[in-house]
Length: 119
Image (cartoon, rainbow, N blue to C red; front, side, top):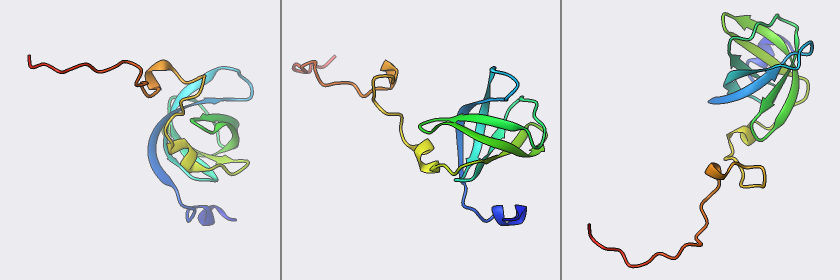
């Protein structure tokens, strides 16, 4: 596919936070995900990258995804993934597993509700 062909791939506009890391550093940088497709994404952040740089992105509900910086414009840049992802997973609500923070979990109905009174 040429670069023009990639523009026809469906993208979901969204706003998520993610982390990226560059191969020469283990440091993680916080970025905003502006849109996401199976083959890539647009990111926004203060990370200094160059076109062609290998990069890893930690997407919610997907995990670490490897890719390459395809383009840069001011503080936004495009990442082309090495392998396709399911963009709908990133939109899915955070699960209620063991590693899910307490404040995200659905409250359990363990406490009995007594009679209500007017205040």
